[in-house]
Image (tube, rainbow, N blue to C red; front, side, top):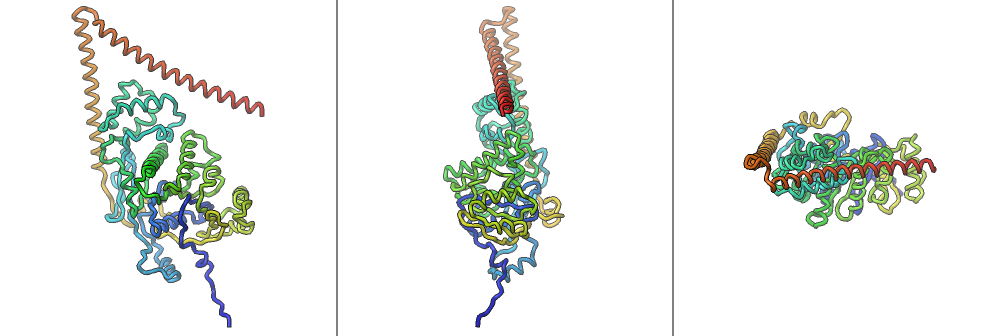
Length: 492
């Protein structure tokens, strides 16, 4: 006699074991399709079961990266899951992870107290060595960098000593009479005044190597108090340091970097700023670096928003619920997956019927299959939570006071700045006194002094003429490009 057993469709479709990674991971789906919980669930699985280092790079507008700090409060849900899946009682679910919250130092933006939970959650403020700044960092901040930017950057770095910090750059720019340069006004000046850029020996400089070698701890890059125009700079600098460490073989190659709502940076149809275009190209480069140790995990609502950025780089692609009225999204899926036989027409039509937590998974060369993912072991963003800081106050309410650290950094900067300013003024006074002595002796400046003054004037004139020439050349090139664009439009 044949027995009929009821099969739980969710249990049979449950994605429990993640395949080894050779590329990156992407999740697409409309709002409330479950992308938020998917990214956490999948990254937690790779971390707990396969030893991957997790770095949460960007939490989107909702600051979702901070929720690693709090274990899930879905206790009844996890009790049911344990029974249904026969989970070993020793397995910690929900789970309290060890988390490092990294806050770039913007002294006028950061509050005096940051979240902490001894033994589990630690907040760190960090600075960036001036010697690390390269042209790519500036391109992520300023639109339209040119030869002037390169010249001033090289001049500053060539004269930079190991112990020289922001105060030295302040004084050097005054000596060079370059206060009107864009790179100074829009990059160095604000970042030095916010105390982010420091000397090579500053104790607050972030040790990226140490952070990446700590495989157990989840690293979270917190841009909550970083001005929007500098966020790409912080991300680019961190990824640059990781890439350098991987090239040198100094850290393991199993690393996952989470980026939520990537369309905020890479919406192809809305890109206009040079710095966004440049950063989009950098992201594509990092995606190609997967086999060397950079596995990007990203989500957005539509494939159309990142067309040309992720094609050919994916290892795992999750497709969640798509709006039934979105013809554009369906056509994109048909073109990319339907035409290659990865998805059937029936599966594509079913995308609008998926529930939260249900996805179609395309794994490497395999055809699409429907999977179901559990909730993450930690909390995740929910409507009504408000800001993370308010939630932390209600649940944990433990804080790290960083006011003394901020005062220490600012005090040192002001002392160094005043000292260098006095030295500069003393040199100017000494020079003027020497001039006066020479004139009082013979009524005229000494021949050597005249020659030195003439050379200094010529150098300043040459420098100004060189800058003016470069600016004129850049403007001329822009005008030529504009003329060519107009000519092409007329021809069309």
